[in-house]
Length: 117
Image (cartoon, rainbow, N blue to C red):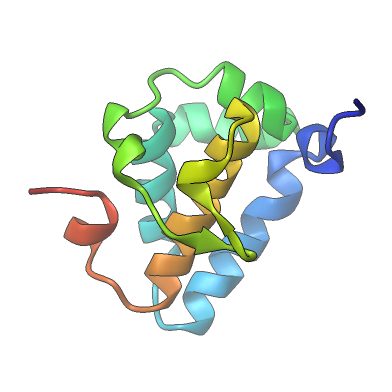
């Protein structure tokens, strides 16, 4: 079976869309970066390097410094698909990020988005 097109799409090409979605709803780039950092472990310089290298989504998640174990608590639907039911690991990681950005844009508090007790 062929890989989904998103796997070979550069993360840098979608990153501005995440920011635009958040800013349109009064949130900030810093909050988007915080979500990405929480989910993947990429910090400021590391994230910037991935963006500059035009890393594709598959590599972005495969080489993530530390995927947050609490990401398993992310549930709900993105594009009509329940993230907790996605079997393919890379697609699930991508949808986790989509879900967190959706929650940010909907005004959810960062403590809840980042699954803090």
